Image 1 (spheres, helix red, strand yellow):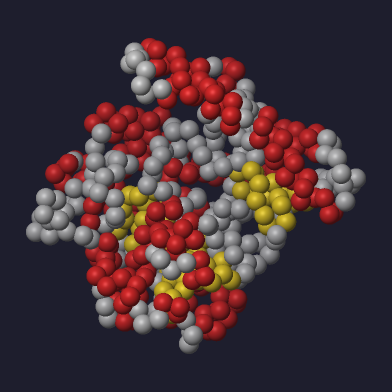
Image 2 (cartoon, rainbow, N blue to C red; image 1 turned 60 degrees about the vertical axis):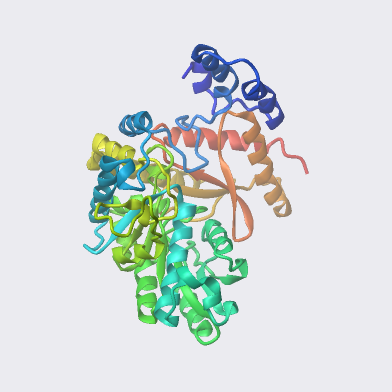
Length: 458
C-alpha cells in the first residue's frame, strides 16, 4: 500500500466519481485483459476508493484488515476453493471445520453437548437461531414439525412474538421478516442507564404477555452495536429456562471479549443459553466471511437438516456440516480462523483485545474532563459514544451538528467516525479494533471534529 493511501482512509470521492472510475472495468464486451492490465486498472481506479481499515484514524465500524495468520489460511482456502458442506467435496475441510467448532465450544466453556457451525455473517446466524427457536417452540409446545408444516401449523400467528431490547441489532428485523412474521412480532423492552436490557422490565413484559402471546424467543445482546453494552446474560437465561423459552445471545461483536479474563464475568450464564452468534471477522482480523452459530444442544441442529439423493444423504456416516445450516455451498472459513488464532496465540489474542479496552477507557477518562463533549455512556467494550456540545450552539441544533460533523468527515477521506442515536439523540460513535488506533490518534480525531464544528452555521 503506498504512502498516499496510508495517509487517507479512502479517496474521499463521491459515488458518481467512483462510478466514473470503475465503469471501464465493467465493460464485459471489450477485449480480454492481461493480469498486468487488470492490475493497473484496479490499482488506479478501485484501490484508492477502498477503505484502509488499518489507518489509525479509522474508528467507525467493526472492520479489520486480516492478520498474517488469517491471510495465510485464506490464501490456502482460495487456492483450493473448497466447499465444506459435504464430505464428498472436501473431506479435510469438513473434518477441520467440525474439529474447529468443537475446539471453540471448549474455548468458550460450553458443555460437551454443545456444537457450532460456520455461517456467512451475524445476520444469517441470528436468522438461523430464530428459525430454530420457532421450530423448537412448534415441536415442544404444539407438537408439530415446523419444517413440514410451517407457520400454518400454529393456531394463531398473531400470538407469536420474540422479545429483545430497544438496542438490539437490526438483523433481528431481517430475521423476523424472512420467517414471515413481520416486524410487529418483535416486542422490545427498555434498557437501563448504561444500555443493558432492563431485567425488571423484561420480567414485567414476559408476565404481561404470558397469557396473550406465545413468546418463542428472547434475544440478549453481548456487545450492542451502538454502545458495546452486554446484556445481563445470566438472569435473562435463568428467566427463559424457568419459563421454557428459547434464549438466544447475539454476541457477533462482543463474544470475543469473553476471552479477556477481566471481562469474562460479564458473560456469566452464556453456557445456559440455547444459541449464540459470534463474528470472528469483526474482532479477530479474520478474512470475511467468518461467523458462527453455537447451540447448547448439538441435536437441535437437526431441525435445519434436509436430506437429498446426490448428497446430504441420510444414510451417510461421514461428518456433514451442510446438515447444520441452509447454504449448500460456502467457503472453508474455519481454516483462516484456525491459522489466525494459532499464529497470534491465545495470549496474544487476549492482549490485543484488552489493548482495545484500555485505549477506549483512557479516552473516556480524558473526554469526561472536556466541557465541550458529552460522554453518553461508560464503555464496557471498545465502543464509546459522544456528543460535541459547543457553548455557542443551542441545544435545539445539537442533533444537526453531530450529523454535520459526520457528513463533513465522511467526504474528506482523512478520518472515519460513525453516527447513531442514543436516547433518541444523535451521537458520534467511536470504535477501537485495529492495532494502529491509539489514544493519540483518537484525540487527534476529536480535535479535528471540534475544528469542523466551528464551521457549522445556524
